[in-house]
Every structure is written in C-alpha cells, then in structure tokens.
Length: 386
Image 1 (cartoon, rainbow, N blue to C red):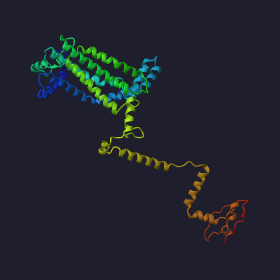
Image 2 (image 1 turned 30 degrees about the vertical axis):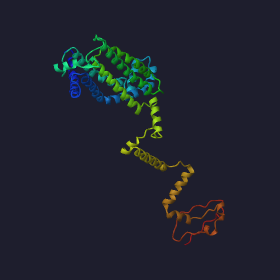
Image 3 (image 1 turned 90 degrees about the vertical axis):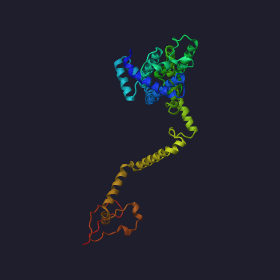
Image 4 (image 1 turned 135 degrees about the horizontal axis):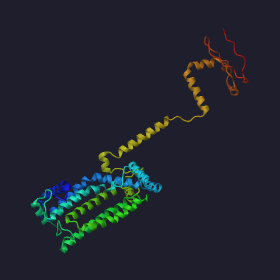
C-alpha cells in the first residue's frame, strides 16, 4: 500500500462506515445510496461529537486572540526593527493569554486525518480496490450505490454523464455556500465590534478565500467526500448558531441581542448576567442561591466596615487614652480625686460649696495634686488630720 502509515485510519474509518451500513441495511436497500450515504453522515456525526471539547477550546482561543490584538499591534510597532525581540514578546503574550494562532485551527487539523482516510477509502472503492475492512462483497455493494443518481465514487471531472456532473456541481456549490455562511455569521454577529484589529481583517479575508478553495478542490472530490464535507459544514453551522445565541462574544452584535432578549423575559440581573429559566431554576434552585450568597457577602462587608477604627485627632486620642486609664484603675481613680483639692474654674461657680469641701475618708492616703494658680477658691492645702 502506498500510504502504509495511514492503514490504521483506513481501517478505523472503513469499520465505522461498515457498522452503520449494516445497521441501515435493515431499513434501506443495502446496495442503495441511502444506506451508504447515511453511513457517511453518521460517521461525521460521531467524529464531530468527539470534537466538541476541541470546539469549545477553539471558541476560547478565538476570543483570547481577539482580546490581545491591541497588545500584539503595540508589540509589532515597538519592535518593528527587531524581529527576534518581537517574536519573543509575542510568544510571551501568547503564554500569558493561554492561546496561540493555531488554536482556532485545531478542530480542522484534527479532522484532516479522517478526511484523508475517507478520501482514500472512497478513491479505492472508485478504483475497485479493497481497503480496510471493506471486502469484495462490500466493494461491489458500494459501487452500486447512487446518491441522487450519482455514484458514490463519482467525481465532477471523472464523470462523462451530464446528470452526474449536475449533481456533483450542486453538491460542490452547497458545500462552499455552507462554508461561507458559517464563517459569515461568525464575523457579522459574534465578533467584538469595539476592537478593530488586523485579526478581524484576516478573518474577513478567510471568509471569502475558504469557499473558493473548497470549490476548486471539490471538482476532484468523490460524491462520498462531498457528502462528508457538506454534513460537517451543516453541523458546524448549527453548532455555531447555538453558541452565538446562548454564549456570544461580549461586545458583539449577538451579545446585544441576547441581553435584549433576557431583559424582555425578565431574566437579566443588574450586573448584566443571565438568570436561569424558571423551569431550570425550579429544578436546581439556581436563582435562589446567588441571592443568598450576595446577602451573606453584603452582611459580611457591613460587619467588617463596622469593625474598622475611626480616624481621630490628637486631642481625641489623648482623651480616649485618659478614659481607658481611668477605667483600668477602678476605685483608685475616685480615691485620687477625693484626696486632692478641687481647682475651680469659672464654670464651677454654679457648683454648691459643699462639693468643694469634700473630705478624704479617714485611713486612706493617695498622691496629692498641686493646685492650679490663679483659680477661684485655690488656697492652702488642707491640713492632714492625725
């Protein structure tokens, strides 16, 4: 075999097709186009389901690339005369953002081996050669299969019948058109319009280049391969529509439409996030938990704020320190005040005289305070009783 390193893929692809063919043979003619065509479509569905995690990574990588475009442009302008430093800074930026230019092409690269294997299987069927698990009996059955009157292994250039060329040409147009529509809905609805970067111009150019490439290559594709690409393009279109509607890129046209729908349905939170649907919230209690969590956060924040000390002036701090000293001394503070003479100020004129003549209880002594000069009622110290 010429491509011996692809033998495992030939076996895997042919085995999947044969298994689905045996399943559909219970409903359709085993030698008919429905049984073989649906087998190819089912193989595409299996592959695309397995690629859903990669599709999610592709979305995240594409959005990350859009977000770092202004920084990339700044690096290019700053190090335009130093290619090595520019490359180093670019790699550093990719590492910080967790993305790279090839991440968005990952699903296409993963599909490439399966596409090559399917092309090899159908080309072998067209050349009347067994491949993988397709034996002589299955080979004869596949050669008899026709899709809308075109043999499964027929190509646009390799067929001499006009009806077959028309069927193949229509499939090529549908394949290219579905590719264009899928890329266009991504550019017109799910791109952040607030960021004008070269990346957007590049994506816009690819929107027109890819369909042309597929159209040129399609004239050499067998009908079975065209069925494969048409199916995978339709799958991509539907999958992307779901993502654009439910998880659009912030700042895009689809994001504004989604916010308007949520607001109209009363499911838009004040912070711009979406509430769960009533039936989903009833099952999971999703809309209640965030509110309780928010109340807890607010209560905790208020409690923390109350515990924060207030800013005081120097006089207030001295007064607070004196108050704390009086509290810690307890009864001794009262004894000190009673043992010392009272220095009257002008505001003490309204105080009864009996209060100023308070005597210290017998048997208790304490430090004496010097009387203030110039005060009213300031005089000699009272004599200590024996």
